[in-house]
Structure formats: structure tokens, C-alpha cells
Length: 442
Image 1 (cartoon, rainbow, N blue to C red):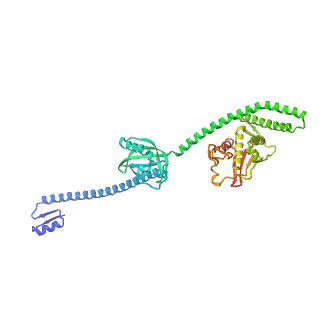
Image 2: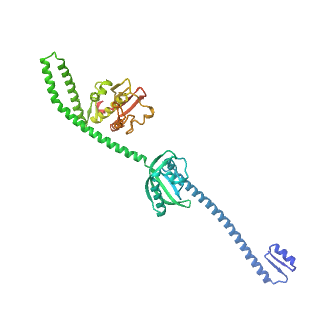
């Protein structure tokens, strides 16, 4: 706005200023002066428009910038939350140590430590025997800014006295503007247990190997006993012909005949177990041989009542004789051992068959298997019996290495058999083994 007036008083000029006029021209004036004032006013108006537009753009840019900052901040929060959750759910222990204080620890690390939460000195989590080496590696990682690996032990709880062996990796890094060390570690207990089991497997393997050598030796000895036994039997028969009234000769003949059968059975069993080729096996005959072999044990002979209910004309099963022998022998031995403290000791073995399967039931009147142990009995080295190295074990008490039913399960899986069991604590257990029939039998 431009004011042109003939008044020159100060009051009027002040009023024009308050009205924010662009120019104030008093008479007399030249047209050139008015034209220049109009041009200046127009330029000023253009400047005001540009200033207003710039202000609008500035406000719009500021609003957009604030929006982007909010979005990026939220994205960073979500990313941080994601990585924090990822660190919490990863199946390794993770903790961040700054100035020897634990500032972050994930769920797996807390689980290994046996705690619900933890904030405090890292050394309170480390077993006393390993703190010195742990501190050295922690310091070197921070100072040298290099990664290291260390095996150490983490305490479980505060007052249990227990510890867990772990393998840890140390990495230098920053977390929340803190320079520290992140430690990633894993529980080595399962690995150490598996190595322990592997060593036990090897020990048991060599023991079984030695037993097989002893079996071969026994078979050879039994074979060599046939000659003197035949001489004894022949002389006893001659003596019986000359002196039929002697009861001693009849006793000698009965015992030599019994001994001959045992030697023949031992030789046959040893020969069959040395054969690793598949063949057709008569389960009934195999069971009879296993029972006859078991009767060489005086405890079995005098304290176990055996009932065989074997189906006639049972179909043959195909496989390695030794595998089936080990399987049935282990089930029989397991049944016998379970009856050690029982007053009634009855071992019942049944065979039967239908159109699809051949069935073997081995039933005992033993102590039974508690429900909580049903899932454990096939685990390697699981046994409720004392170990053979236990010096406090009574002489006649059965011992076990926890591999009997494990070997049974290996045979079951190898030949695609079905193995089930039913057990009543205090009354006994029945193991049922089903062999699939061959299609060419039908």
C-alpha cells in the first residue's frame, strides 16, 4: 500500500507506519517518484509471496522430515527388538560384558546358569577353577580386539555347587556406546556324555569281542571233549553189560548222554553264531537251543520254571542266526533277571502265527517296569541293575550294562520287526516280537 498525501505532520506519518504502508509520498511530487514507488511496492509484494512460499515449503519439509525420523526411529526400534528377540531365542548362550559387568544375557545363557535373570559381575557366573583363564581371555579380547575361544565352566545357580562345561567364543564389539566383549557359548554336557557313551560302547564292544573269542574257544574245547566222552560212554556200556546190577553205570550213562547233548548244542550254537550270512531260521528250534543253553546256568536250572508253548509247523524267518540269537537271548536274560527277588519265577515263551506275522511272546513274573521308565528301557546304558564292577553287589544278584534291550532294538530296526511290551509293576512283563511273514509263503 502507498499513501500520497498533502499533509506533512508527524502524527499522520506515524499512523501510516502503523498501517504498514509500503511508501509515503507527500505533495508536491513527480510522476517518476510515484512510478518508482509502485515498482518497489510490486517487487516487495513478490518478495513477500516468495517468502510465504518458502515458509510453506520449509514447514512441509520439516513435517516430512519429522515423519521420516519417526518412521526410521520406529524401524530401528523394531530392528533392535527383532535382533534382541533373535539373540534371546538362539540356541546358544549369549552375554555382553562391559567393564566386567554383564549388561545383556539371553534366555539360553540364563537357562545354562540356572537363573531367571542376572545383572552383575561376570566372574560370579564362572566356576572358581576357571576364573583366572576366563579373565585373561576376556582382557586380551578387549585390549587386542581379536576373537578367542575358551573352554570353561559356568556355575549353576548360586548355592548348588554344580557347574556346566561350556565352549565359548569371545568377540570385541560395542553395545549401547559401550566397548566390551560379547561371549557366545554352548553347553558341552551332551557332547561329553556322548563321548562317554562312545567310550563305553567301545569297551563293551571289545568285551563282546573277547566273549566271542571265549565262545569259539569253548566250542573248540567242547568238540575235543567228544572223544574222551565217547570213551567214557563206551566203557560204561561195557561195564553195564558185565554188571547190569550196578546203578552207578546207569547213572554214568545218563550223565554222559546229557553231557553229549550239551556239547552238541554248544558246538551247534558256536558254529551258527560264527555265520554272518542270512538263512532260514526255525524260531522254535532257536528258542529250545537258547533255553537248553541257559540251563547250563545253575540259577536258571534250579530257580526258574520254564514253560514253552510253541506253535507247531511255524513258518521260518529269514536273517542272520546270530542276530536272532542275541535278540531272544537278551529278552530271556532280561526276564530272568527281573524275577531275582520274586517268590514265583515263571518264564513263559509262546510262539504263534497268522497270515501276516509270526509272533513271539516272552512273559515273566518279575518286578515289572514302572510307567515312568517305559521310555528309558531302550536307551543305551540305562539299567536298574548294578554294574558288574559294583563290589557291593551280592554274588548271585544279576548285573547289567544297559545294552541288552538296546541290542534287541537294533535287531528290530534292522529287520523291520515290531516290538511291544506290557508290564504291571509287581506282577511281571510281557515282551511281544512280531516277524513279518514272507510273501512267497502264501
